[in-house]
Length: 81
Ligand code: SF4
Ligand code: SF4
Image (tube, rainbow, N blue to C red; front, top):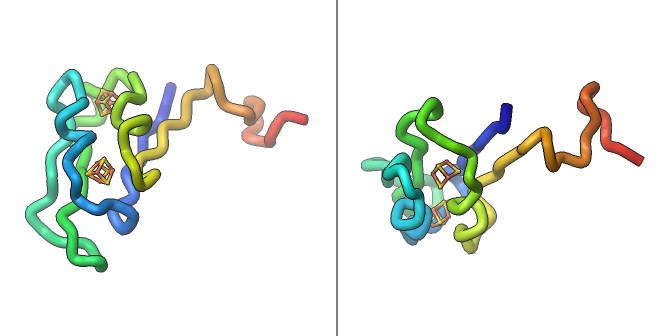
């Protein structure tokens, strides 16, 4: 199962990920991060299809999607040679 993680402190609040998510599954926070920006929040992890569009769109590398099918780690979590 793929995992998705949003790094609030890297987010500049541009909102591109909100626009691109085909499921409307990302919203902006009502609070600000330490750099003074609203940050992107995943609404419902169960509705995320891990399409990775948001991660590709983000100019600040604030969204990480770890897909075991394409990961360079083996099942034990160790990096492959
Ligand atoms: S991976 Fe796809 S479905 Fe999941 S939050 Fe990002 S854009 Fe939306
Ligand atoms: S695209 Fe990146 S920087 Fe822009 S709101 Fe989304 S997570 Fe934040």
